[in-house]
Amino acid sequence: MDLTQVLEIASCTDPGMVRSHNEDSVASDAALGLVVLADGMGGYNAGEVASGMATSVITTEVRQLFAKAPPYEIDPTTNLPIAPRIIRDQVLKANTSIFQAAQSQPQYAGMGTTLVVALFYDNHILVAHLGDSRLYRLRAGAFTQVTRDHSLLQEQIDAGLISPEQAKHAQHKNLVTRALGIDPQVDPEIHEYTATPGDLYLLCSDGLCDMVSDDDIGETLRAFGSNLALAAQQLVQMANDNGGRDNVSVILVRVLREYPGPRGVMGKLFAWLK
Image (cartoon, rainbow, N blue to C red; front, side):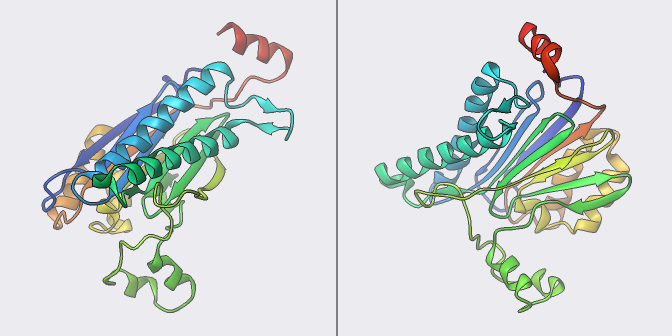
């Protein structure tokens, strides 16, 4: 099912005001309904290698697999759509690729990346993430954070050791507890949500949310949301205006209409004919 007429997508990525190069990577495939954002880490360009590998492996592999079977196809062993398994498997494959490259090439030792993957299918959004890059949703004027950071800071908030307000001024914001490519095995957090026409989704690296408050991000999307490219550029500019201490990347996705997956024998026939 081609989602080109269903989803509107815009992205923007920038080195920021301090860093000499950009270790973030973004990728999207509107027809497939797939968007991927990664924020790399590691010395001497290794971070951008890791993030680039993550977005490339996941988009390439998912595209090939869904060309053979659509995401809403039912897995006979689980009686559930194949999409969650496919996304998880490709995240794990990307993890292995990055980890092996880091092990075999000294200049890439210790490299890794955060990750947010969103797949739109069958009136749903499937979200997989690792680290502190985030996904937000603007629905009917309400702006909410959908993902929960895998970070030391978030663990301290959850344990009641510090308040969310104190966390805004903490010194160790960027210590993540999960990332892609650091360990041979990884456990991506994967959830699925109903998507409705008019929803606006934001994927971003911490270069945005560390520099711009959630309230200001939400207000910007409400004000500029009718022009996604302008909204994406405005968010990046705000991060840079506030100091731009890190690379900053955003992907915006608006759901224009419903996109149910074909059902039943005729639906499968229709999907096969396409």
